[in-house]
Length: 291
Image 1 (spheres, rainbow, N blue to C red):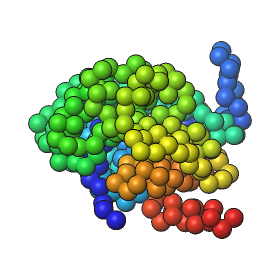
Image 2 (image 1 turned 90 degrees about the vertical axis):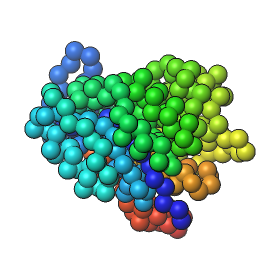
Image 3 (image 1 turned 120 degrees about the vertical axis):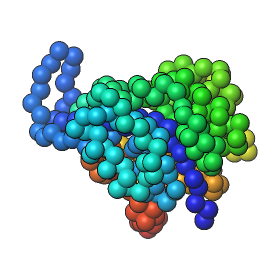
């Protein structure tokens, strides 16, 4: 199996996670059951998921000069991700305030911090993107930086994968260079059918029901293995990172495998920490096949 070189351009945060029996209504205070801090950020999460799934993954992002920065860098490096391109900036690192209820549903508020300083790409970062097989982006850093990275990737033959979250209207320059779009159903509605139709490969995640794929040569739905979910916070990022790690295989194989990776992550608490290894994902698929 070919090992792809994946560069993830995106965010890294410290997640401040509270668990509670139910999510509060607007203006309501509820008692929490536990509190934890852990690495998060969609970019770093997806880089970790790709590395654990067997890819050669590098991360381009930024941390601040606060107490969170050292722990954030260490957690990504420990997962096997190349962090030589991680920037250190003045000011706070990004944070995400996460609340998870007893059913595993969540609500999240993100404060960008150092992620917002990713306003341009250096020559070294551009060279890293050009040398990759796949560039994977989200929308938690400035949009114009994502566009610049994606345009540069396309110009050098690097596959551009985009997970447009938090979702917003996509500029024409970005739509024109995206090869693979990964969205959930609500994101797909926001992006719009006219945009989806212009992108060669579209993967729509369906939560516990798996994912739907539409490509130049085929359309199919892939089911996810049934699991007892305890925290869905990191499932989407685990899916996306695993999809990138497997993308050089056939689309049906990569999407089905990514569904298993997302399901596995839902059985674990946390975001970056919840993604499984290649052997973990294979084991879940094998166990589901026996049932």
